[in-house]
Amino acid sequence: MVKLPDDLDPELYARIVDTGGGELTVKMGVEYLELSAEHSVARMPVEGNRQVVGILHGGAHVVLGESLGSISSAIHAGPGRIAMGIEINATHSRSISEGWVTATCDALVLGRTLATHEIVIRDDEGRRLSTVRMTNILRDRQG
Image (tube, rainbow, N blue to C red):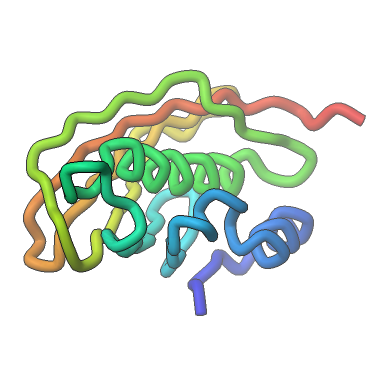
C-alpha cells in the first residue's frame, strides 16, 4: 500500500487510486511506495521496459521520473489547482538489463507557481542509473 500524506486533496487521492497513478505507469509496472510534495518513492521492473539492445530504455527512466515529479507537484499544488510539466531533463549514468529500479524524488523548490524536483533512479545495489530534474508550473484548475 502506498504511503500518502494525511492532508492529500480528496480529488487527487481518488485520481491516484482510480488510475493506479496513471495509465502509462500501470503499463510499465510502476509501483508507488510513498507520495508527498517533498519526498516520493516508486519502483519499476526492467523486464518489459527494455530497448532493442536489452537494457532499460532511457525513456522508461524519464517516464518514472516524470510520474513522480508530476504527482509530487500536484500534491504541493493542493485542492483546485493542477501541476503541468514545463521542463524535464535526464542524465543516464549507468545501464541495467534486469531486476528493478527504484526512484527517489525530492523537492528542490516548492513555490506558489513553480515546483522543481530531482529524481534519482538506482538499481537494487544502490548504484545511480539516472538523474532526472523536472519543473512543473502550478495553475488554478479551470471549470
